[in-house]
Image (cartoon, rainbow, N blue to C red; front, top):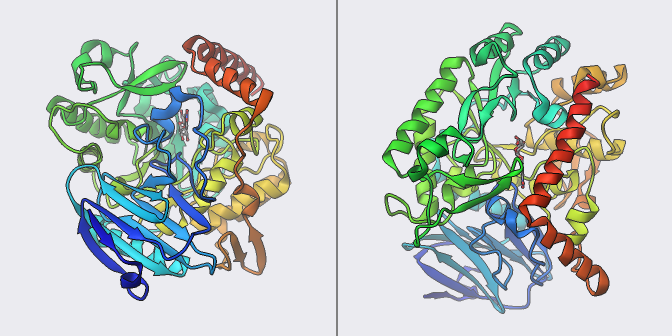
Length: 523
Ligand code: 9PG
């Protein structure tokens, strides 16, 4: 264990190699910066109290780092920081994969899961300190400036309007309706595949994936496609034929990758040589279909704890897997990572989702107040985490998720939609899922001007910005709920216990599907 005195770093940042180190703090801090493990996990400045454990637990593998969810002290992945009463911060950040930072009483401490690695330590003004950390990360993880060659494309994505009810007819109709709106990419999201694990066109796409990409390209844009290549459900052919390709624990039990699509999901062991070949072939297949923009999702599955075919720290294994995917898809593909452990993906992808999903509602009472879950889809959750990850911008195109313009299927206020649009301008990553069929003339004009203008952005405070000459403040998205006590607490515990039952989740899924079918019928 290496101990660092605060006086040694007060005036100069340092890089120290250690497996474990701690810094004695000069005084009691007022806030802690916790950095969640993957795209959807919470990143925020919070007070020093432990946050209530988010619920339901069945989602832990897909929402947080399940290995640390019950840690008592404020903590986060790779990087942590404390803010003092005078506004200065002290940051401790790993410059390699497989590390965590904890605040333990009067010490900020960092630990690598396996071998010793480098730590960056700096004290001073928040934006200066984070910028230095980002630069050191870039030097190591993207040394040849592999990233951000051009601006990010402007994307229309099918998820946040059509969800899984996409089919050939509705997509063709939508692509036509988008007319000459200045999008660079039309991206087909979840819903085209046979099963999670079986990445072939399902019955809703009778002409096949080649034809779909061709249709998009005929509109003058790049074709984009969503896949979750590291996951599978038990119903998939992939799982049935290659059960031995999946991640197991030390005792030989299958590792859970969480629950989604009304089913439990499992993770491929990406260190298995046959899996590597299969993944590379899949990437080549998708490129051969004609898709040049790949949104690879649920990537955390490649970094779960387990007994791998080849022994490696879990995030190092994940980074190796990303190299395979990147090489197979080719340097000319645009690679967006989603649900990705953050630091291990730097230098290997073009863009990264930096927050949880937004939604057509600001917040959800059950998820936010009863389940303390800051990762479920919702606009407040999306903004909160993304606004705390802007420091990644020099390293990768940062995707804060889509902005909304239309109001027929949307309960966000005009101001809330505006916050999302402004956040997209700040991130310089502009996307929407809105259907022109649902939009008024005015909303279409707003969308067009959003896509075709680039305001001058200046940050004036932690959450405050000037966009051209307009002030914007994101503070309304940053608060977190307190733990419920008494009867309400018991009710929350009961609901979350229910929320851990497969049957209950399946019923919710069926209700969702029903609502979706209605929506599809109205199109
Ligand atoms: C498609 C979607 C969209 C979306 C992705 C991802 O349970 N969860 O915590 C959870 C989080 C995100 C999520 C799904 C489930 O959405 O972020 O853009 O592609 O998959 O299924």
